[in-house]
Amino acid sequence: MLNLEDFLGIVHPALAVVIIFPLIGMVTRLAWQTRQRRLQVAEEGKSKVAPVVGQEHVQLGKWLSGSVVGISLIGLAYPLFTKMLKAEVLAKDPFRFYFIIAMFAATIASLIILYNARPKIWRAVFATLTGMGVMVLGFQPEIFRRNDEWYLSHFYFGMAVIMLMIFSLAIVQEIYQDRKNRWRRVHIVLNSIALLLFISQGFTGTRDLLEIPLSWQAPAIYNCDFANKTCG
Image (cartoon, rainbow, N blue to C red; front, top):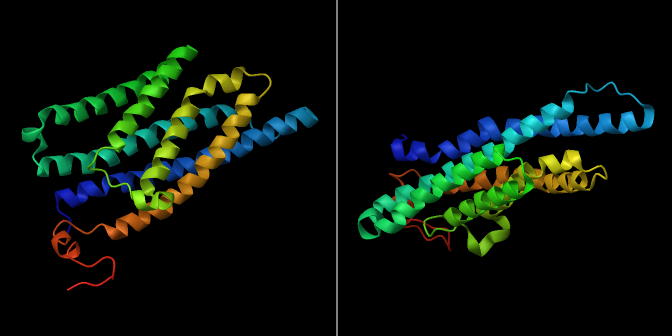
């Protein structure tokens, strides 16, 4: 049976399933339709694809980018604060405890400002601050990163896709202002990579959930011999 700690542990994956993956499907479909419309108009002068698909793609893309960052912060907050509270970090190292809280607040504020920034310099500044905030929080010692298997790590794949989403959010204006379509090509390539990373997150996230025991099971599970795959 789930207690409060176990319930909080599944908030991040539950939100990913309910919010992120449906958005990925919608954004991908709209991206394809937007490209088809652009090609058809260029070749034939008209298209059966509705003109509104481009605007909807941008709007849902912004929702996807922000949701990825926000849900990732929730995923980082759970292990950070549960482990810090158990280790009594507030009493032993209050500066670090409050620094972590400040970093969460600063990262969220930077993301909100990035959404509303118009000048290129400010979009670059707050995209950088948002990315740095996520990185600082992600590389705290309480976060499990699977460093010995980084190429199969949910953490490292997640960090990569977060940076791609932040970058995509920052260059939206450049995409529509660049008549030579250089930024559009960059956007297509990077978000194709992001799509592959999202798929990998589905596999690695599921694997990690299978490996995390319920809180009342943890003492027995962690006494097992993981190298030889035996218990008892």
